[in-house]
Amino acid sequence: MEKLPRPKKMDSSMWVDEAIWGHRLYDEQTPWLCIMEFLNVLQSENQNGRAFKEGNFNTLRYTTYPRMYLRNILFNNPQMELIEKNFRNDNHSQWNKWIDEMNKNSGGMNVVDYSYLKKRFTSFQDFVEIINFLRSSTIEGENNKRWSSQFIFPYGPDCLYEDLRVTGTSISNDRRFFARTGEILYLMLSRSHKKDEILGYLSNKILDGKSSFNRLVALLQPDDEQFDGEKREGGYLPYSNLPEYDLLSDDWINLFNCNMPKYDVFPHLVNITGLHMIIYSLNRSKEVLNNLNNTTFILEIIAPQKTIIRDLASDSYSHNNNLSKQAIEEYILGIKNTEEWDKVITSGDPYEAARDLIVRRFSWRDDDKAKATSAEGLLDEFFKKASVRHKQHVQNFHRVWGREIGLVSKRSSRRLRYAPTDSLLKALVLSNVESKMEFQEFLDRLYTKYGFIIGDRQAEALLETGQADMEAFSENAVRLEERLSSMGLLKRLSDACAYVENPFVKVGIR
Image 1: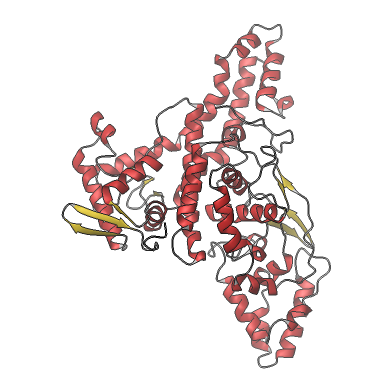
Image 2: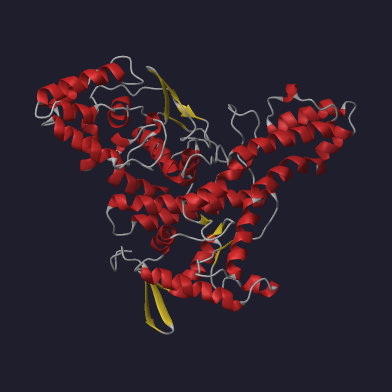
């Protein structure tokens, strides 16, 4: 499959991870923050009439919002409760003292005036209660991130803003928690077959700003706050179309079609998106390795006692976790098996020819700092540098995101393995069951769509190799049936008939 041209402007010292997976998959950006960054991109593009529209591939340029008043009020406001307590029953003094404190101590702003808030709230106490309510909806609330990297739930467009680094009165864009993985997600959905349906849902439920919670957040922000800023650019997705894009968009639409309150869909959206991003990352690794086998995950449904499935699930995890490292090695050192490298070795100056090839192929910017003295040595040195860079973030993506979405666990074991949590299982039911589905059909769907091996029917290839017996996988499936039943997601009608049920779908609406 042919890759799209790499961008002319690059902010990387080499183009290796980005060429395989895009710019970029980043382990420190959690699935939740990926969704938040995605919504920022979508909001900006939607306001400019370009939502999910690419004039040319990988030319995304968008504006994000700082919303410094809102963020200072919510997350850089340590005196609020103390002022409320010290000036109890004195609404006038409470407002004056708090406004004075905030005008003097707000970060990231040169000119500050919070007096507009007095006209918008009946009392200072009401204001405090609203702030505490909104703080309770902080994304990943139990975290130790700085105040400028805290985000509230996306009730609407007035809740969306970018990750920033604040130094005194100055602000700068930070790519640690909004690290472009949300841009990758946006580009994936832009190239999917259900992008218009997704846009229609998000426009009506989130981007229109009509929800009461969004209007409450808007009250905290002045009408004249300036949002003009530099365009963000640099998002790169290597392929114009892939089956993974469409499978991702299918699951989004399936979740949107569930008859649940609109905000309740987000946790399931986060988990299912994280799963698709993991599958995408593994598939790109296998593509480099010319591995044509489908990506699979042996899932242990946790048992009271250790079973053979636990070891198999650990081995499955280890195999997949090593794929990206192997892909980097093949992508770089595999150049030795090309005619281009043969020409390098037989040229008059192999070292300079190798350097020219490596710079051209991998956009290496630090070639002038190389210590090697031979063509082979230079390629090996570059490979080691690329490997070190890969280990810092992309190599961790499968492990970190797997744990974040509830796919990877160490529970009752010293080894990481695939052992899904209830929250992930629920997301899988809501994404795949329209109203009800026979249990074995559900297992087959999970295998066909995601590569999940749970029961004996999905483990046929393993059984043929003698790695496990039919009984172990049959018992694994029984444990899943019991788990789903305890969660209210499965009903057994007879000894031979069990149905997985989606409790959020009205009969006849899908």
